[in-house]
Length: 243
Image (cartoon, rainbow, N blue to C red; front, side, top):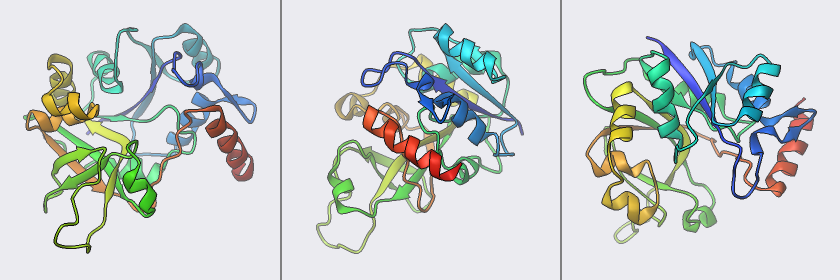
């Protein structure tokens, strides 16, 4: 089975323009993401997917495999689908380009032993929410799933509601997702579903249309994405400590 890791990287971030090229300990952020995920031997190939020549040039400078994609993509899944037209694989893993400390154990976990190719299929890392404040934070996507770890729903509001019991754990979505080619093609060729439009969660499209999305719980998998200058300073300090 061939597994390809894709790092979507766009220059025009609303809150932090040029984010993939921001300096961290003397090198651009995209370098650190690529360098970290290279330790995951389960990934046969790794590519940065971008629509910006500045990012392409930096990738070439550091011998990072890069693929230029269209500048019309609205989501990472759209960008992955274009890559899937150029790179053949059994499974494509979306890796966040703004997480220089991305959890490599979670990357390994998102790759199943077998990937069905006759149906649309995907996997999604989730982790337990340990801080009550995170349950109420709408930026944390809460996930519910059945006894077979099939995703049932995801929401910005706290679900499930503790009506008859408090004896349960909330889980949240982690932005490490895997897809087979059929799942990516479906995403490209479909319109946003009703629930996706309401919640503003693009991954909900798969559940809107009844596609198989397996959730995989991973302990201690709080992501640290760089969305602001404050996040960037925090990551710089952490990177200095681990160097």
